[in-house]
Image (cartoon, rainbow, N blue to C red):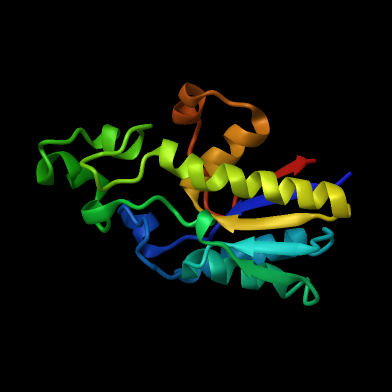
Length: 188
């Protein structure tokens, strides 16, 4: 039986400050680097035949840390694994959203299946890029009998959980947010 391993990147300063990151390329902070090392130790004994990563440095650096324990494993950069695009709202403190953007309800910006203001990627749009990738990866893992790891972000992880756990749209919005370097494993 093959496995898909999915994990979120290590912590960034924007995570600590509770800022929307989205497509902004925010690096791991010192704690995030330690979290990636801890996850790498945890996964050292795990068979990982192929690694896909978001090209954003916080996910890519986490993937590279994991691969220190798997030096023969190929790393593939995959834009479909990038975080949601928060458009002009990227970099904003979540607590400041209602004040800075009174036309929006903060929760609608962060937790919605609809595009916001025509600039914020919705979960429906993320699904359009993540589901085809997950189908392709799952098929490859089954066909070649390999384990594949994905280094990504909260938004794509929610959609991956929807895909593998057969969650509904409402359940996706209600699920807890992925912690930094949290890991999910799915047999395919």
